[in-house]
Image (tube, rainbow, N blue to C red; front, side, top):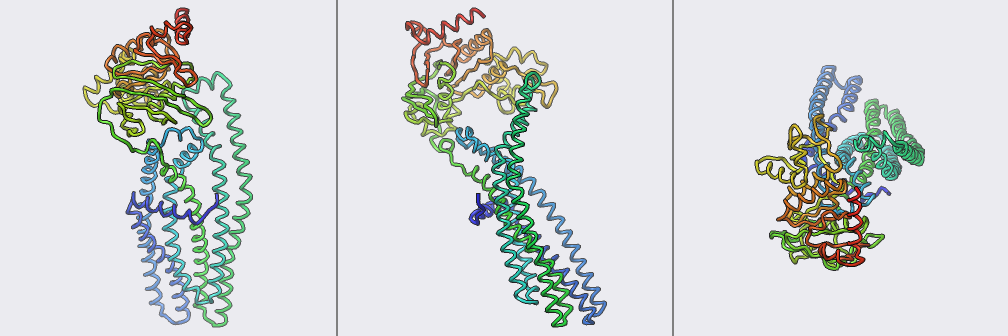
Length: 591
């Protein structure tokens, strides 16, 4: 990506965001600006007055007064700068944490499909790792640029005492330096862009090595060697990227340093030439200090300007994530205020970029019904669940909630009515009760809800054997006396969690895939008995619960191929459901 001046617009956004969060940032920078100008002019003034003293233009007492006054001013300025630095340190820490929270919250408003994009994940992790820091740095650079410019103007006035050529030379070198520094910035940004996918993969491997669930495989199989080989390839890949850019960056950096170093001797030479002609030693001394200061200021100015462009590109990544426009999660649509009565899927089609996942699906669910949607793995069942949760929108056809088109309903409102439990779920290192409620347990009603939910998920009996019951910590990551759930218990916890959310339409996607047949039967029995007033949809390739539901839909290759009650489908000779049910029943009997 090329560094362009139009990218500077992001630097102004960085500054406005930081000031919005911390108005004191602007005040602190103005104070710092005044202090820097004072610190720049005092050394030049002191040297000038000392030379005047040697020339007899001022008395010794006057010189002492001036020097002591300047020293006192420098002490005051240093104290003020110390206070400003403390304030800036606080602002930096607070802003970095606060802005990271904003990025976390952005995930709620990003369409689900983006989470399946490696490019989005690269940008999001990049924004999360560097976004807040880069925004702060860009804003700080902007203020540094203004401060340096003001300092430079004061020094330019002094340099003009020699000859206008000295000033022109300094400005030309500054322009060349800025152009070359931009090239370095481009190389660095391109290098990081090429490294980012490799870094994200290495972070995945790193995470695998401290995730508890992966440790048994690492200890007992060769997967550790596989991951280490992959890690070595990623490191080699990063080294190749470094090689690709390191020589270019080093060469250009050396050129930058060379031309910048020429400013001081050129201006000093001009100062000596003109001072010898005028015999004005005072001008020579003053210009000598000013030339040193000017060289540093020009380098600082051009470096800062280039850094703004470089860092603004990194900040741009964070802003692009924040500015992502989502079709589904845009917060628009009607807010539901009525009880669930009926859900209808009409001629629904959904296509991934490479295939059609669902083709002409028709399903009807009435309040209080228990529905089973069955089919082999890969038939399209989980895709259908994501459509029912409006994580995806249908490509054609429609889904209706009480006769209202899904696309006209606010997704957050819809998900308060329609919820799901997936076969892969996360348990959190908080208490069992908090894992069920997904919030603090505060009242007796909350406690009763937790107990009812655990019974619904067939986890209550186990939890009651634990010393702290529902107040037991889940995982042992932070407390050794915590409990560790098995795969089947995690699924039961997820079912309990879904019950506690009190969804009016509750979808259970493969809720028993990790359970043995007896535990599976018992859990389904509990759900059907305790959830008799709920509308439930069971998604599964195992048919344990289908005999007692109101209606069954069998999906194959993205299409509903059979629909009806258990008895109706069992009477279809050579029916696909009948064949599946008979085959699984025989397997359970053998077990």
